[in-house]
Amino acid sequence: MARITSDPTADRMPTRQMIAWALPDDSMPFEVDAALQKAEAAWQLQYDATVAAWNAQCEADKVEAAAAERAAGEERQRLQEIQHAAIREAKDAARAAAEAKRPKFKFHPLATPPTSVITVRE
Image (tube, rainbow, N blue to C red; front, side, top):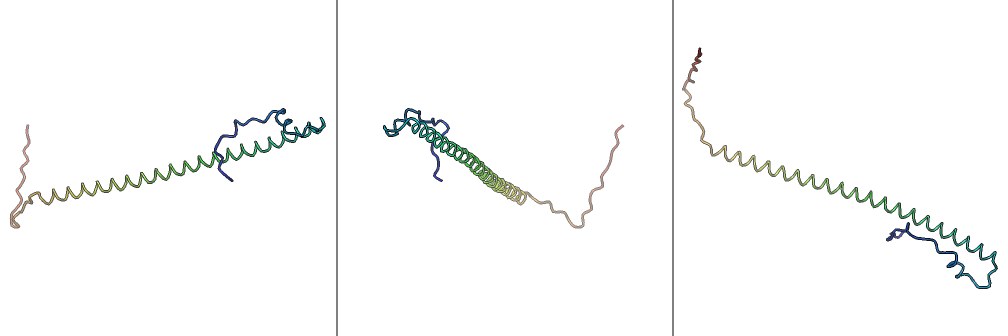
């Protein structure tokens, strides 16, 4: 079905005079009344179908918008995780570079560790 571009809920039924104007001039009064009732019933049926299609279209648009928003949120989350991983890697690389530049203490293999002295204050 073609997309409905305007809200049909504001549509109004043509007046009985407008419908009667479209009928042949030589119509009998009972024919005019039957034609008016038939035209009104046909208009109401078409109106109900159009409004139902409009409501279904609006609901489908909401579902589609929610799916698009969810997909966009997942994409934002994925990009944010990539960005955080890159920042973490940069920090780790900077930390490793700083560790590499820091002087290392070299102990003599035969040196004995100092004995610790515990003093008790009174």
